[in-house]
Image 1: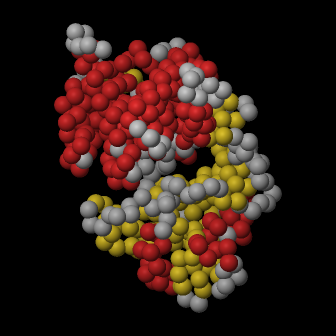
Image 2: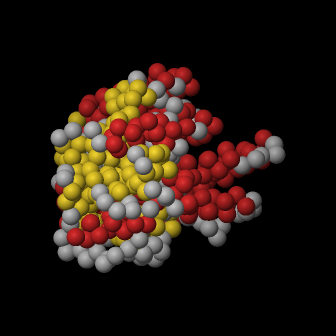
Image 3: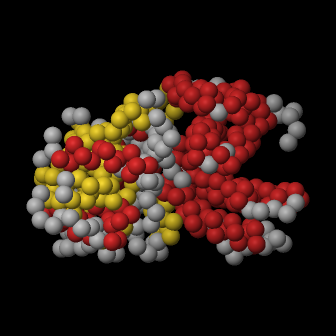
Length: 464
């Protein structure tokens, strides 16, 4: 056993607890170990190792997380916040913050190097920059990204599972058909985990002059709330035209994925069983969902026959979109992080992505009502009416754009679309209950609305 494998684990509980990308805070950890380590630089002022950590849990199976570990005798002051702890006669730290380490990653990708089981693989025909220092981007979330100039961005996957990551798989597929709906793939870092291929990182085109869809939607909502006397279509920040364009982009991406990877059918019974399994798990953990359980199951019961399926994004929302001067781009094709990798790689209905976007429009507007400090109940009710207006307008615009580009209106498959929306809202309930309890009202309110829509369609005599 190396010094790194022996001494690093003692520092990891405190280090992981500080990381936003570590999703298991609060879970009972039974042990942490270095599962695999691959030396990338073994001599000089900087030592660099690619490590996969095995984190054991008392309440479930172990999971693996990736850290690019740098070691220096005297790390620069800007690396203090990235420090892990003393290992041997050096200080170990997260090397994604180290300029020499990120420059090494780009060079290794450009030259197609191999270190043990770790392969740096440039995409055929792609010319990578001769050199470059990575600039870490924004606040860390589930992964960590660094930009090289204005043309390349590298993403290090933090949670790693055995098997090909769908983010890499789908980007390669879309590149094969010349897609303009995603940032083109430039290269990847691949390795082995438990004897199976594992995706460790990706290099893509960097859409430097772009805006995130989530931020644009929030600005639109704030503009609406600031104009008490105007309707959504009268406000300068109206988002509906962008929502329609985004719907068109998603439809084109679905068509390209079908072209590259084929299509199939899935029995509705199989899908219904999957949705009910998730519902069972969440109801057992969130008592507030129990009053809605019967209505949700009634929606799922309407799933019959066969459902057309193909590869899809799997976790599509406004935060997974970028608006560039040329149009919209879709990013991060990993699927739901909490879903097992084999499930994320299965074919699914394109309506799962449509439902994800519809849920995202709800989040963009209703969470601002929650965060707003109201002076009285009347003011809150007024904001809710305006929020309803914005959500309906943008949900409709997105579906209009999708229908225009695909030739099939997702609203025509109301039963399937509603089931997917409810499944996403159920997922959100457990997430919010654990992470942001005050936000749980957003998916719970949406569940109430969706179940009521089902009841009205089943019994037209129910009053609107």
